[in-house]
Amino acid sequence: MNRRFDVLIRNGSVVDGTGAARFGADIGILGDRIVCIGDLGDATATKVIDASGLIVAPGFIDAHTHDDRLLLSDPHMSPKVSQGITTVVGGNCGISLAPMPRPIPDPVTPPLNLLDEGGKWFRFSTFADYVKQLEATPAATNCAMLVGHSTLRVATMTDLTRPASPDEIAAMREMVVEAMHAGAIGLSTGLAYAPAIGAPTEEVIEICQPLVEYGGIYCTHMRDEGDKVIEALNETFRIGREVGVPVVVSHHKVVGAKNFGRSKETLKHIQCHMATQEICLDCYPYAASSTILAPHLAANATRVTVTWSKSLPEFAGRDLAEITEELGGTQEEIIDRLLPAGAVYYRMDEDDVQRILAFDQTMIGSDGLPHDEKPHPRLWGTFPRVLGHYSRELGLFSLETAIHKMTGLTAKNFGLADRGVVHEGAFADLVVLDEGSVDEAATYDNPIAPSKGIETVLVNGTVVWNGGKPSGEHPGRVLRRQRGSHPAPH
Image (tube, rainbow, N blue to C red; front, side):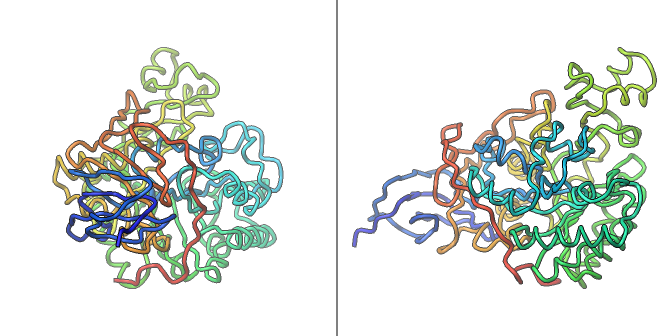
């Protein structure tokens, strides 16, 4: 019998996303699903992709993004599909575009300005309005979206420095219910940022209560990633326990020179608590972070590079030390002149980065900021950097393990059914790559560059990247979290 498919990928070496050993096979796709894996030598297809000498893997799932606006403003999603990403998790660090039922403050409250410093994109009064727009004008990638606690505070409160009142908590809870009903997969916090620093643990617990009914997840940029990192982890675990939901420790790291090496302590602490509750974590493969420019962050960094400045845009891409010397004054005075602004901070130890990356349960997330003029290279290079630098060159883990951290593990933790694996019946989110050449091309000096070795990317059975450029197709979908799909404690 001559079988016919819409897409046929021939002669590839399949790494299926589970961590299992690779195997040779053809892959037959009908519509948006993988329907057959094996020897399909007698088959024909509308489109045939020759993967001889190449790896065929599940499309990568970016566990931590700030792509809420990018999905609408640049639906080709070139920074993501060019590195093999087929699904992004957005709304992280307490920052989401929706809901915003009243005009956003002018200027936009940091760090919400990481999504849009002008404010026009904060135009969705409900989360459902935002989801409807995502579905009406699809992007090249799928997305799974969180509702942000800081956004809820800005939408509800006038004085962000204090704890929310009972009425404000009730209003935020109603917004969480609306968001979850509309398709949010959970709630995120950015407790290290000014709009949420004043929120006590109890406020977060109260606002998160609706997550239980909807099977949601709690993701957090913790209150501290430096001296008080263990206390911050304990707060995270407490919120998860008292609400009764899984937690994700976002972009796990330890910062500041005196904390170098403490990842041994934090990972042991996380692993201990994983035995009694559902805990996940992600990280990005760089020893520098990126967010808004702030004096307290610059104070413990060995180097700071300004990524954008609304007040002095000509200094984007320049080192803060150079700017300070050129303009004259103290570092704090210069920061004040640059604000609002963003920055890259060099304040982590490479040994900690590798230790966290190698931890069995660590997912990969880029945490890229797509609207920075000179973004951190992680926006374009995260996933190929893991495959090239850390897996192939340093041998930190096998290619199969690296891909599992980017695919099957992430899909399981976020409850994304039939994603992150190359199995019959799974969605045809796939990447064809060259194991020998795959690597980042983006650097700190030249951060906007498509990665090396990513040959073809498919989302829901449709090619979105091929021959070093986007195809122009936008087959992405808004993904919901499947109840009960999170991993059991281990």
